[in-house]
Image (cartoon, rainbow, N blue to C red; front, side):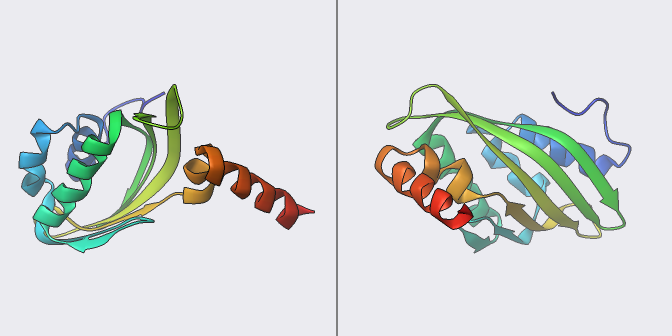
Amino acid sequence: MTMKSPHPDPRVQRLVEAFETLSPAALARLGEVYAPDAVFKDPFNEVRGVPAIAAIFEHMFRSLEAPRFVVHEAVASGDQCFLTWDMHYRMRRFVKGEQTIRGATHVRFAADGRVVLHRDYWDAAEELYEKLPAVGAAMRWLKRRASS
């Protein structure tokens, strides 16, 4: 399931399209979406600037097979936006078959419509670590212990 219709805010629609069509070739155009001093933060990274943001996505494309984003919802108010999304991918090692990470992104837009703050929220333990063979067994055991 993807967004049912284009978002009425052109800044949001450009961002959604950038995520859903992200590819190694598209990384050269990240400066059209992100301001030069944009901040990007996720559970593993915190960087500033388009080259550093591009490096995160380059690493994703090198580390995973066929990663792709599907944006489900986008809510915007003023200079802020909140997206919910799924990232589909296959691991090069460890787990076979397509995997999914479910997450959300908070974005703040600059006056020119480009992103100045990108903050991803997703549960690395549930969405990633639990899927790894040795680490996953330990994470599932800890989760059971914590809930009992």
